[in-house]
Length: 208
Image 1 (cartoon, rainbow, N blue to C red):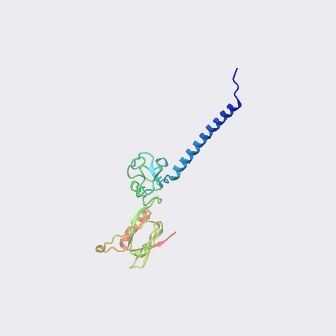
Image 2 (cartoon, rainbow, N blue to C red):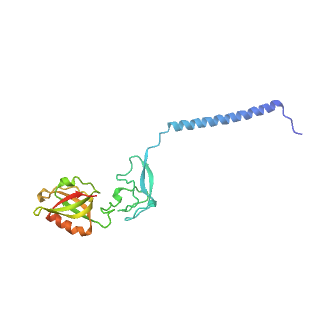
Image 3 (tube, rainbow, N blue to C red):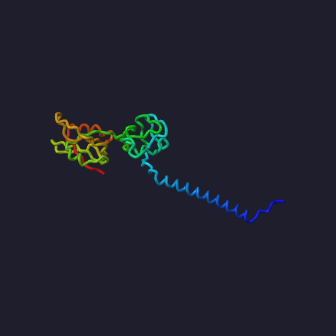
């Protein structure tokens, strides 16, 4: 026959259970407080920046696709000089290892004629440097060859885009005057422009 516990015994058991739960709760609160203290005193995470890196080994000449690239976190200020932000569609000039940051040194330079299919890049020396100073890459100009003897002028290239404005290297011994401009011209305009550049006075007008 099971024994019948006295009310006093049942009260003692209840007190023990309550005490055990209170100790467990107190331990949990103390652990949470300790974790909060550690978090509060821990140094903040170091600042970082996102750098474009290769997802796999890539060979020279690879035309970069989205799957070839990803962005990785690097410590702020630790990214290599010349790191590029956009590279999809560009061509590698040298091999790249997986995880290596993409820099301008690893990429071929965009071609002068990119976006101008069918044209030829032709350097033309314009005698008046002040005229060249008005130009910006992407402007379109008409090229005129003026003959001082006959007081006539002929258009030798129309709506030619300005592809580049090279920095001038002074060469006073050669007596070279004017500024060099690289224009995109039609193939059948190359000969007339080349002849006019050595025979006539070249000038430019802006076109639409």
